[in-house]
Amino acid sequence: MADDKNKKSPVMDSEIFYPSKEIIENAHIKDYESMYKYSIENREKFWAEQADNLEWFKKWDKVFDASEAPFYKWYTGGKINIVHNAIDRHLKSWRRNKIAIIWEGEPGDVRTLSYHALDREVSRFANILKSMGVVKGNIVTVYMPQIPELAIAMLACAKIGAAHSVVYGGFSIEALAERIKDANSRILITADGGFRRGKATDLKGIANDAMKRSPTIEVCITVKRTGKEVYMESGRDFWFHELMSLPIANPKCDTEVMDAEDLLFLLYSSGTTGQPKGLVHTHGGYAVFTSTTHKFVFDIKDEDRWWCAADPGWITGHSYIVYGPLINGSTIIMYEGAPNHPYPNRWWQMIEKYGINILYTSPTAIRGLMRFGEAWPNRHDLSSLRLLGSVGEPINPEAWRWYHRVIGKGKCPIMDTWWQTETGGFMITPFPVTPLKPGSVTKPFFGNEVAVVDDDGNEMPAGEEGKLVIKSPWPGMARTIYGDSERFREVYWDDYKKQGWYKTGDSARIDEDGYVWVIGRIDDVIKVSGYRLGTAEIESALVSHEQVTEAAAITLPHEIKGNAIHVYVILRDGVTGNPDLVEALKKHVRNEIGPIAVPETVTFADKLPKTRSGKIMRRVLKARALGQDEGDLSTLEE
Ligand code: WT7
Image (cartoon, rainbow, N blue to C red; front, side, top):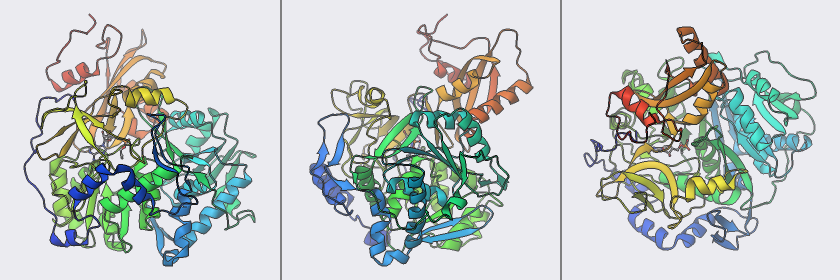
C-alpha cells in the first residue's frame, strides 16, 4: 500500500454525505468542532469529566501523570474495577433486567443473558477460578470460539483482579504456545470447538498440542460447545459445565478493588519482528476511553441493540463487544459463525430478527457480502438500522457506497473508525453529525491531536503523504509491551522523541478540510482481511519447515481480503519445488499460525533481493510482482 506513494487517492475531495436533521437532533454530540476545541484546550478536565460518568471506589489524585514518559499513567491514586462498571453498577437500576447479551450460534441456537444473569454467571466462574488458585495479578490465557463463555471468562478474570490474555480462536499451535509462554500462564480456558461454515473447529486439539509446548499450564478448563470427542488429561483438564455445577460455583463474588493502573489484559499484536507484542491495558483509563468513544461515536441510547460483528479475540471485540458497550449498559449482539452460512443473508437475517440498530464491521466483510449481490439484503427489513461502522483497514469508496446505499438505505451515516490494538479505542473517526467523504476516517476524537509528518517531524502540506503520528497521550493507550518496556519505547516513541509523539506505523494524508485519509502500514506489518500479521511471523513459520532455508512474505492487492499474502521461499540444497511441497508449506503455516496466515501463492526462488546488511527487500519483490518500477536499488546487494 505504502508503495503507491505518489498516486493521490482518486476520491479525495469528491462527494460529501451530510447527516439528516433527525440524526443531528438526536445525537449526543451536536457540535463536534466546539466540543473538540474544548477537549484540546482542557484535555485533563475533559478526561476527568468523562471519568466522572463511571463509579470509582476512590477518586483519582491525578488525572494524568507524565513523570515517567513515555510510560504515561492516568487517574493515578484512583480505585476502580472495570467489571464493577460493566456489570455491578447496572444491578442497582432497572438495567438489572435489561438484556446484556443476545447470542446466536451458527447452527441457530440462541441464548440471552440479562445483566442480572450475566452477573451470576461471571461470579460463578470467578469463584471457580479462585478455587483453582487464581489470584490478583495472574494472567489467564483464553482460547475460545465466539460464545458467551468467552465474555464470561474475560469478565470473571477481571472481577477477581486477574488479567486475561485472549488468543484469537483462528490462531494455531505455535501462535498459542508462544503467547502462553510469554504470559507465563498457569491456566488455559478453551472449548472443544466452535462452529464455522457448518463444521466444528478443533480448538481443544490445538490447545492440547500447544500445551505440549507450554510447560507452565497446570489447569485447562474446557467449555463443551460442539460435543465433539476430545482428549482430556486427568489432573489437568476440567469441563467447564462440571465445575459450574459444584457448590463452589457460588453466584455471589466480591469484585476486587483495583488501582486504576492495574493490569486488565494483555493482547498480543504483530509487529516488525517475529515475536508478537503483548500490549498492556489497565482498568481505569481503558474503562473511561472505551465507554466514552463508544457512546459518542455510535450515539448509544439505552434502547439500542448494538452489534459489533468482530471476534472478541481481537481488540475490536475487547473494546466494543465486551467492555465499552457493557459499561454503557447496552444490549449487545454476538454471533458465532460465518456471515455467509448457510446463505449469504445470514447477517441481514440477524438484523431483521433482532431489530439491530447499529452494525459495526470491517471492509473485508462488506466486500465479501457485496460479492453476493443486493438481492440478499433486499429480502430483509433492515429499517431498524440507524448507524453503520467500519474498522480494520481503509475502506474502498466502492464498498463504502454499497454499504451506505444497500445496507443503510442511504440514511445511515458510516463511522469509519481508525485505531489500533495499542490505542485501546477510536482515535480518528467521524461522529454521526460529521459530513462524510467515502474512504476518509475524517477527524480526530476528542482530546486527540494528530499530524502527518516527514521523518524530521515537519508537517506535510495538505494532500501529501507522510507518517501518521499522535501528538499527545490519551487514557486508553497501551501502557507498555509486557516484559519488554525497551521495545515499547523503541517501537512507538523513539522516532519522534524530541516532540514526544506516538508513531502509529501508518502512512496517511490530510486534505484541505482537515480530513484524514489512511493509506496503510509503512512497516513490515500487513493487513489481510483486516487481520494484523507480521511478515516476520509468516517467514519464521515457513523457515521452521525442514525443507525451507529462507522465506520472504509480501502482500498484493486482493478484491475481497484487501491484501493477500504471497511468499517466496529458498529450499534446502538438493530439494526441488513441486506442487505437493506448495501444499505442504501452506498446511505448515496453517498449523503454526492459523488459516488467516496461509499464503495465496508460494514461489520457489534461488535468491531473494537483499540489502548489503542482509535485510530482505520486500518492496522489490512486490514491485516485480506488480510489474512496477523497482525504485531505488542502490542498497541492493549484488
Ligand atoms: C491497524 C491496526 C483497531 C481495530 C482493528 C485493528 C489499520 C484500523 C482502520 C481504518 C484504515 C485502519 C491501520 C492500523 N486500520 N482501522 N478505519 N482505516 N486503516 O487493530 O489489528 O491493531 O491494526 O489497522 O493500519 O495501524 P490492529
